[in-house]
Structures are given as structure tokens and as C-alpha cells.
Length: 170
Image 1: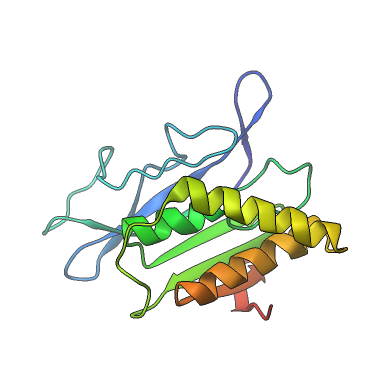
Image 2: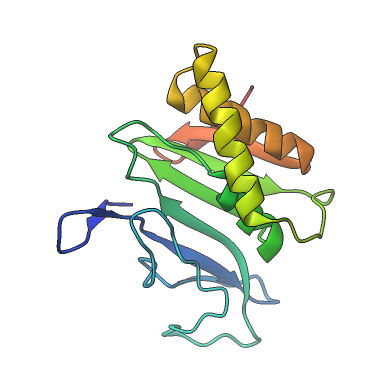
């Protein structure tokens, strides 16, 4: 996914929501993230901008978006990204930052609960800062925090480049 910028030159998160129907047909909606900002991708879970029709009502099954805003330092999922995936009941989410990519899969054991997005985001940021104070670089600290969240919520974290992923071992 290419980077995108606002007219004032600030970076914008880009992405799309992946929808599926009962027959297994998939399509993209909200390409680009119409209401996205420099620090948040806005996934349209309702499919308001569909230019196609499904034979049955579509369901959001996943999303992907970029994280272009960390001074050219790869940034994986934020705590808010993990919370969104859980709260929305998405099967997967993909983040790309620079050339690095991450895939977070929900499993049958991922809880069907509401988590507090703000709390998860802030707690993840605090843990990230603590790990950095212990000598981790930004990206490794962030991956460790996300890996811990994935384990806690019975999710699986993969990392990759060029669309080829392997299980993250943190």
C-alpha cells in the first residue's frame, strides 16, 4: 500500500476494510480510509461506499492499514488497533509500516467481549516506554507489547515483508 499525504504534507494512514458474504466472496470497501487521519485509520464496518453488490449482506472480516508516522521507524499494531479488532469481531488485521508488515489473527478462543480501546492504547504505550527504558528499540518494544496482547486475547501475531509472513516469536 502506498503512502498518502494530506494537502498540507502531513502523512495519512491508508487502508481498506475487507468484506465477505455467506458464499465466501470477498471485496474491499472504504479503500483509502475516507475519514482517516495522520494517526488513525477509520475502518468502515458498514460498507457505506460499496460499488458492488453481494448476493447476501456483507460482513466485515478484516482490515489493513498503514502506519507511516513514526519518523521512518516501523510501527506495528497499537493497543487501539488490537482493541478495535477485538471489539469489531474482525478475523484479521494487517498493518504495514515502511517495508515491515504485521498480521494479527483472531482465533476461536479470542474473547467476544468489549475492551476499552483508550485504556488498552494507553497501557500499551506505557509498557512500550518501559521496554525502551530497558534498552529495547522502538519497534522491538512495540512488537513485544503487541505479542503480549495477542497472547492475552488468544490471537496470533505474524510479521513479514512483501506479503510473506512468518509467526512472530516474542
